[in-house]
Amino acid sequence: MKISAHAVGTMLGAWQEGPGPAHQRLSDRLRLLVLDGRLCLGAALPSERDLATALGTSRTTVGAAYRTLVEHGYLATRERARATVRLPHDTPSEPRSGGDPSTIDLSFAAPPAPSESLHAAFATALEQLPRHFGRHGYDRYGTAELREAVAGWYQRRGLPTAPDHIMITNGAQHALGLLARTLLSPRDKVLIDHPTYPHAIRAFTDAGARLLPVAVGPSGWDPVHLLAAGRTAQLAYLIPDFHNPTGMCMPASLRRRLRLACPTIIDETMCDLALDGADPEPFALHVPTAVSVGSVSKSIWGGLRIGWIRAVPSVLERVVQARPATDLGTPVVEQLATAVLLNEHRTQRPDMLRQLRAQRGALMQALTEHLPDVHAPLPAGGVTLWARFPDPISSRLAAIAPDCGVTIAAGPRFGVGGAFERHVRLPYTLPSDRLAEAIRRLARAHLAFRRGATGSHTPAPVA
Ligand SMILES: Cc1ncc(COP(=O)(O)O)c(C=O)c1O
Image: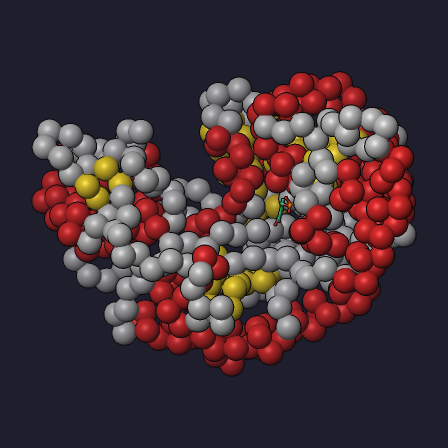
């Protein structure tokens, strides 16, 4: 795949910032784009001349940067052909795939399962399973039991919902992928929160869409920009409930008056995780045409792989037509167990919320002690802090951190165009003592970085 000079320039963002000669900064940034997966393996880079023109720099600078990448094994060259992206053979594997098990993983933001209630729900599900044996088991909308239970969950939240407004999916990510493929045409524009959930970015760009990022800044959502972008977008994707990664919650006053001109997907994956205030009102209460995506991954357990779409039946019919291209339904036992858990109101977990509050406090405290220059606003809910470093070092820190025994999700994963190099997402889903140790290790990585260390770890997967 050929990548245009303009596209590389956008991915590079503010590559001129930082110390050292320009060619080194450029090769460093390109290397991080490769490690990050944003420049995919085998991609053919633009010629030195085209990239130099696009970046407004000299051809010598680009030539030197490319040579460094070739020397370190990140680019392959052939005569009269574009240089292509590769990885050096000796790139250390990330801890999850056979590395040091003592590494603390701060790249996943998901709480552990409630073992007793989950176990009991599966026992009940197994008792109920024989009811389904007489049928083929391929149900593209999901089992009646779970569709009813999800509709009941919405009813309890004050949003009248019938089971035929619900389609069960294999997690919220699957729902986003299905909606992207169903609702978008190539080159459509999708309004996204900026930052936002990285795999949603991927779902929309894989469907050929262009992204229209609207900042979620320190004071939250900006209605003026949202409304303006909504007029040119074909679709909007918002996470108003304990937004990933910032943990912010859109105020009720804004939900009530935000009427975007384009169809809107509302991601409610985090809605049961209010840590301080009341539970947020469902967005669709005010915007009945909104398509809601939900999941039990954060409120119960990610391993269930159960999510859903709430939409009018005509939208679900279109989605169900698209579904067989990737899958033919969701496993029945998991659906039955999830229905049991929803009917017992198990997405409300006061114990877990208490624990998350304590862990959030421990993480804030550890940052104050070990990384005092890092600023992290207190999130209203969800499971992550959006921490800001004084300098744009996030990707480079993420590439070094595993050498100090911790993996982190760098800020640019949550944005487009190389934004958020000052940010790191830090989950508080681990026990407090592990979080304190993780931040001590991150502080060591930060020190190593300031002393000139460069890492080569590929980015950890995030959730
Ligand atoms: C905002 C958001 N949407 C979707 C997902 C994916 O959820 P699931 O595990 O249900 O696929 C996540 C997971 O972290 C998330 O944070």
